[in-house]
Structures are given as structure tokens and as C-alpha cells.
Length: 189
Image (cartoon, rainbow, N blue to C red; front, side, top):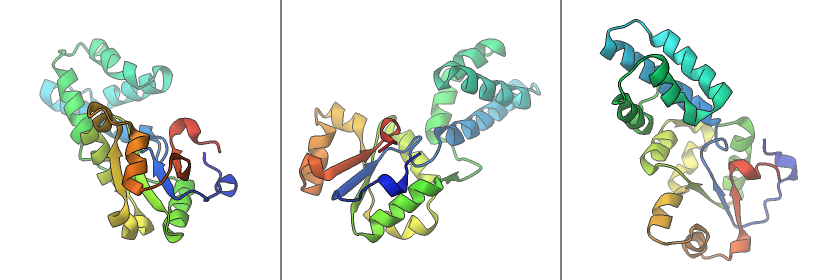
């Protein structure tokens, strides 16, 4: 967790990752697991949604995100075609619940916006999925600042052979030492 008291806001630009920074990534994944298990139950005509979502949650907690789908498909004897359905759902899911910003990140963002700092999102992962996550965040009092929030996708920049930091320097017209990046590994300042 980011401690607001020890973060100095002396930079000009602050960029944030989405997953496990703005909100806990599992909040998104657990909703996708719920939607997927209900889709499978409907498609298969078997009453397995509750058991499946519980299994997926436990597998996520015990083994991590990358083990959930292969283990679930094997455990429930599902066709491999469900892999594609899951990935499509994961990228485009219409979540039943909003994603909630952590209190600490909400305070930090509000402080940065009120100080007139440049704030952006620099995110890795599937750009469609990452945009979908942003769409489902409950921004609350930060909603008024969203028009000034810029979003950048690491994978798209790298695909275009552009170094993300170099891109940010040019986009914001600052030097690299004027940019602060909040990502999962750097949450302790």
C-alpha cells in the first residue's frame, strides 16, 4: 500500500498502472470468473456455476491467475474452446459491480489533481481489457478530472518500437527525472 505521508509530490508527472495499483486486480478477475461460470452453466446445461466460481477463486488464491483456466477446464471436463470464450469475456466483460479505487490511491490522485500535476495511466496488458477495466472503475469525486487523464499502453508503444519513458518525456515535455511511475512493484516509496 502506498503511504501518502512519505510520498513527496515534487515531480511534474505521475503515471499509474491499473492492476493492483488503482484497485486490487482480483476484484476484476473474480467478477470475470463469476460471469464465465454462469456462461458455462448456461451453455453446458449443467448446474455448476457456484461450484465452478468457488473452484476458480480457490485456484486463483492458491496457484495464481495463470493456473485458473487450465485447471478449471480440466477439473470440469470442459472443451478447450472455452479458452477463447474466457479470453474474450475477460477483455470485454460487462461487470455486475463497479471496481473501487483504494482509499489511499483516491487520496493521492485527488491531491495530485488539486495541485495541478500531470496525471496519466501507463498500463501493460491487453489494451482492450485495460480500457474495459478503466470503464468499470467508480471514480467518485475524481470523475471531474477524467478529461485531463491520459492513458498509454506499454504493449502498443513497444510494438511501435517506442520506449515508454521516452514517449512520456515527449508527451509531457519533461525530463525522465520529472516522471514518477506507480506500479505494483514500486508501491513502497
